[in-house]
Image (cartoon, rainbow, N blue to C red; front, side):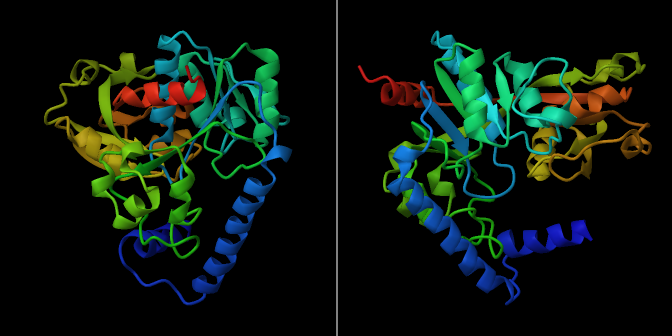
Length: 348
């Protein structure tokens, strides 16, 4: 039932299918609510919490995966290279901990802290605090770590937390879909919201690859940056090295190798495309975003290598699937974005 519902909305939002009439009144109600919430924030921003250090929100105005995590990792690495200490706060989508806030460490479980926060900490070493209440997360981070910048993973619409910079990430392939708000379209906020953000980062394209509505809403194409995802290699999960006759095949030399591609992300098609660009013959195995895996999910994939996303790997690793690897990727963005952000945060 869930997969049929997902397919229906995929068709309505991105493939031109006419939405059910019942959805249109719901869209009007939703649009009024989010517009009122935004106006209230602008009028009462002084009542929100302002951390002692600048906050950069990395979010989106559409539902589903757009590439926020690779961008966040890019920002962490770039700021650290500039001598700054960076901390991250996250809602921890999919997490079910007994209490919050939670500090993510190397022994944390994705069940408790969420897959993306765990991946970001393991990959970058940056302190990450998880709490559905981002104000509480920011306060906890400030109390326990000497940070110069806080990055909020998602939270564009979490207006209780004041922010210094807003970055929206958009997928070049999906864009804004049919340009309508939930549930008739994929937009969390009207496209006009883009007029107020600081930067738009387009995953896999630039502003010309998006709908004209986006460029018009931005008012300034100069604040748009292109992001390209580059694969760095295929790395083994625990136990995979024991699988004979496969490890040698799984580098970036993947020509003609038939593999199972596993992706529990917002846009699994993008991962499968990236994987196939390296010559793999990909048997696609998409799962829902933030899916919690079980060993039974892999019982019919024992005959070929399994290559998954890094976000999936942090959840699959404890299962000890012996033929499993993950594709490590990084974001490539014009470093001018970093200079622009730093000039805004710390004007000379």
